[in-house]
Length: 479
Image (cartoon, rainbow, N blue to C red; front, side, top):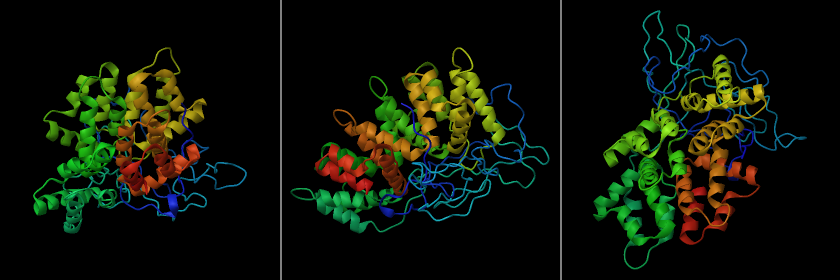
């Protein structure tokens, strides 16, 4: 099934403006897309994802951006996402000839100052010192996909910081006594006050969860997670425990669930690993090793086979371009040409070439590549992947393209996949909603994307699929 054109700037659900912080977007665009991480300095071997042979030499960006019909800002290089749906008359879609960084027409968000090259995404974390060093007068050889050499004094791309909840050293200092006592009272004695559990846990920031659990243990000499497991049941229990683990530990738990036993749960593996930032990916690998005492790479290698295993080796290498790395027009054009050469231009598909390019580019660069590919060859990149690939590799590559094009629409479609048809895929619905709910601004964008795609309200759709305390928890995470 083909994806709609990349969308952006969905109106905030209920009139709420997005909050700064988690997955902060480039200025003038809608909510933050998933942050990228600490990548290795240029010149360091990366294994998979290195530059294919025969590419033209890199150079400074031309004076005018590519592609001309998009007219995206020549300094940053990213193509614009669409303004809010329904803005202009005479068309169901707004015009796409919008300079990158300009506010969309009738945007509900205030205009922001455009960031220069290398400026960290606006968020709650302070910028860190860039670690790359160059010898005087001789910049090192850059890997395939890295920006061309910059003149002296030009700012460098910054490593994207971990998402909230993925840095174990960032724990919020707050008084959790009241919340811990209320939770204990809600579960003590005969019966359980499920409403109190939902009210306290559904919107608690991930940085506060460690303090809540330790305070509960110190004051009541009990494990909060164990008490919830004893007092609750079913998918309501699954949702509360998934929240209580926090985003990093929940990802690790889901990976173990996807890999253990007979067969691999590919969709769960893709949900956790595809499109993640370098910093988050490294945090996940470290936490997995500490939890299960063997490496995530070895477990994935033993569960997958052939070229799919090699694709996941590229993903787990955490060598993606950072969010702040520009999409240079000549590099975008080289990627488009190479993707076409490896797929439609010949009999047989060079699968690993496609995997190498898409697994090493940032979301903004993938968006630029997808738009340039469609402009040049009159077919979407997603349709090419659906035609040339199959099975788990097809699913993972399509998810990469959808993540770059429109992360909110991707998540809206994922939620509908859990609810459509006979029966509800309850476990996957719980896991996906918990993963989305950590970023409140993104939740509003997902609800906007869902209404655009399906013409329905997401909250009402969920209410029609589930019931009881399970329903109350799912709805609370969306509101």
